[in-house]
Length: 311
Image (cartoon, rainbow, N blue to C red; front, side, top):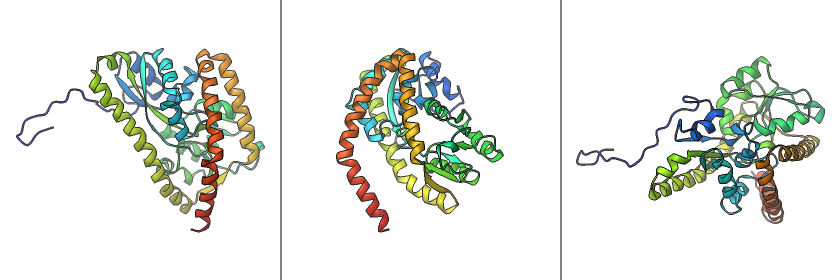
């Protein structure tokens, strides 16, 4: 950066940004940072749940905390301390850098009217959400974002989840799978994480560590605000272009919830790290649910109904 006198201002540290997948594929981000191949990365922890299922607590759990509750757990509820301990086993330091908010339930080539319609359904979905769906008889598939559209168009898969209206509109999935279901119960909160190698972090002086942490906190606020502002615009565009928005049937939601509880128990039995975090996280969720039911949900339920009725 040049000053008015033509001199060059030199920065004490710089972050060079590379497109996703240019250095390593997304599922290898954790190892790349932990081994020092790169000093930091911007990622979704769900990419790493096959390596360690406890990372699901960082990204967001099926039927778990919403975006506000997730932030409360991280900042005030002990979540950050638990996750720092988890990530330290992999030689990285974690920072929350955003959240998409609740995601949509995906695009389907046919209607879902009952639990029977889920059985045998081939769906692009990753992470632990796929484990839950498999208990309902669905067949989860891992497909790269660029391959979602052609896979749906050719009928290689029956359904696919991505993120939400703003990002989904850009992929044009409504043109090949018109049924757009809600809610995305497997990602009620999709938190984004910045991972920094422990050695790289230790080498930063305290003031630059504070600058980095502050920038992460600012990005955390900005990302959720951006999605909340852009998704309403995008959903109107999608509906205008033929998307058929619907809710999952009650029996599907109830069966998925029950299956999720089975998955949590299974993962607790398999992973000591998952078993360590789960009881504390579950207690926090129960407390949040009780409070939101008293005030937040009551007001939101009435207000959203009143506003939409009077549009």
